[in-house]
Picture 1 (cartoon, rainbow, N blue to C red):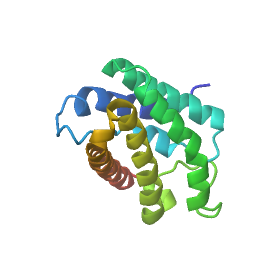
Picture 2 (picture 1 turned 180 degrees about the vertical axis):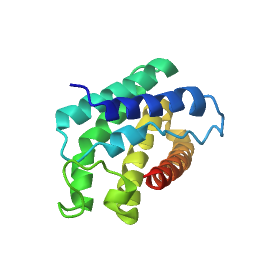
Picture 3 (picture 1 turned 90 degrees about the vertical axis):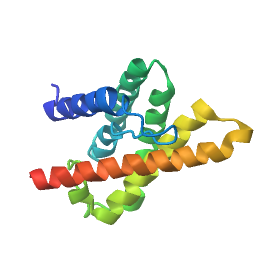
Picture 4 (picture 1 turned 135 degrees about the vertical axis):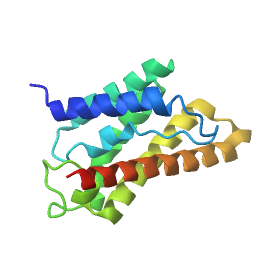
Length: 167
């Protein structure tokens, strides 16, 4: 049975990414990836297979609409693979239940920021490494990774604050 919460989450963030964020040019160095909210918010107790499938489908959908097959999929699958380990380091079973969505109000501000920023930075680094890597261009790669990660983190944090106020 399809969980309609995840379907709604998937469609909302994918549509915002494709039709809004991909169309607005912030800078060649700033590319926000709001769709990462889908991967970041999946409950800790979901199976690794579920997490990998959702991550792959999320990345593949973005890849299809951007005409870059494999770039976002690869980045999403790698952070999905690393996510359980990072989450286990940052939270204990008392902090977050297995079935709770990983949100700002469930994890706490500091842990949420560390968790999100780590995975966002890794995603951006992997993505831009695949796309833009040249030995002579490493400084631009690092700047683009940092600025895009900060923009993504800001968008996700504002989204989380909206989510908390909506409840």
